[in-house]
Amino acid sequence: MVLLCTKKAQGLYAYVKSAVVFVVMVVTMWFQISTNKIVRDRYFPVESLIDTQPPFREANGTVACPIPPPGLVAWTDVNTGITEAEAEAKLANVREGGSWWPRDCVAPWRVAIVVPFRDRESMMGPFLSHMHSFLQRQLLNYTIYIVEQTANKIFNKAKLLNIGYKHAQAQGPWDCYAFHDVDCIPEDDRNLYYCSSQPRHLAVGPDKFDYKLFYPTCFGGASLMSGWQVERVNGWSNLYYGWGGEDDDMWERIHAEGMEVRRYPDHIATYTMLNHTKAPLNPRRYELMAQTTTAYKSDGLNSLNYTLVSTKRRPLYTKFLVDI
Image 1 (cartoon, rainbow, N blue to C red):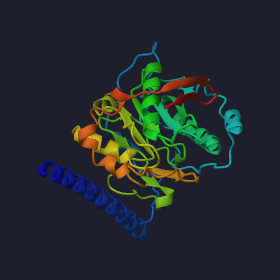
Image 2 (tube, rainbow, N blue to C red; image 1 turned 30 degrees about the vertical axis):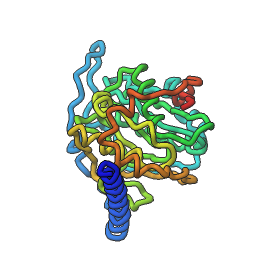
Image 3 (spheres, rainbow, N blue to C red; image 1 turned 180 degrees about the vertical axis):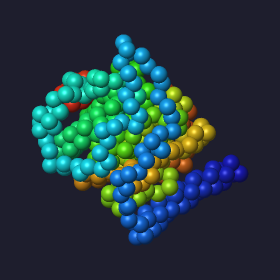
Image 4 (cartoon, rainbow, N blue to C red; image 1 turned 90 degrees about the horizontal axis):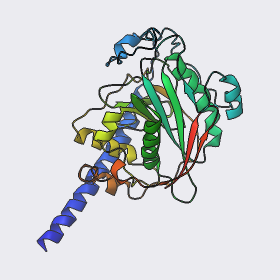
């Protein structure tokens, strides 16, 4: 009887904690949207954003690329009407499979862009067109990986991120990995996709939230982690089917391992969010989030199961079609 009551009390505490988190999210969003407006600053010192120096690499006498990159233009509008075919014609300098690196200097960082995907074909053109140009102005060595889930189960974004990480890692080496929603497009190229000594939340200021952080513990939209950081937290959870919770789960994993989340200023880390029909909510998200700190060491990269259906090298990306 005592054990039963204890379990019920623990379950009640978990749900109360999750409800408090939800209330904080809503209140924070309302306060920020109602009291703040973005102030753009074209002359912001971008070098102040760099907190980790890249490793020294020799490449047959080729010099290292300058830091910060000299070709940054600050913010640019996102062309939301461009098709994938039009993007391919525009970006003839990208190698098959979605890879690019600067020819005249050694890139400071090698970055894999991992994008979970299903039923968002209209977003591929805007995303690819903007992201390739954005990353090239930052003089990065990168490849874009699209991880598409087959249609037989509810969408599981976090599991796709684990799969994309494992396949990108096998095709590396990469210094770090950007985990990126396809509907989330960076506007300002001073939002450097540079590796950091701590996990970085990139999508700080989405336009749909008036360019302000959604809530203090938000880790969604786009984030950047080194391979060592991903391995340390055992990757993402494999249990979140449906929308919501997987990014908050990762926030808890990061802090459980004694790391911290870093962010650029919200007026630099601005994002255009492409409109789409929202996926069904995950009814178990709060229950799963309440268990993160006790379950993450056995739920993640070490429990990942899936079937690779196909691998295709497209002009602007490499696609992994997977059955989970």
